[in-house]
Length: 117
Picture 1 (tube, one colour):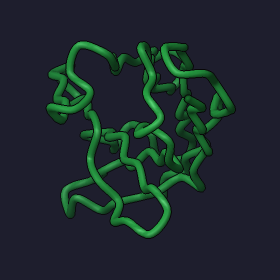
Picture 2 (cartoon, rainbow, N blue to C red):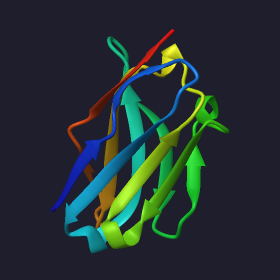
Picture 3 (cartoon, helix red, strand yellow):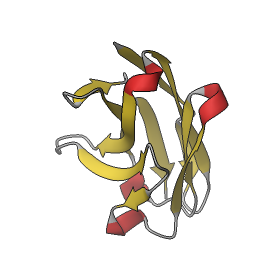
């Protein structure tokens, strides 16, 4: 089992920055991949960025050049640095860990990001 807790959300003006954190606990050694997703009101949850066990990173086109995913293995934490925020970035942000040989998915509870214009 893996538990995830996100933090760092809040209200920011357009053009501002936030850094989200996703802290993992439990069977962290079994985690192969952690991704960040977001869900705006009335819309589906979409992939934003991910980082593999090997350190490879992946981004959706809309955040490339603005968002950066990174990790601190000693703290079992994955970060999402978000710069140049736009009102359309407003959403609940979730992290998801994919773990063990069965690729089991675990989700955090989400953190709200609101970008005002």
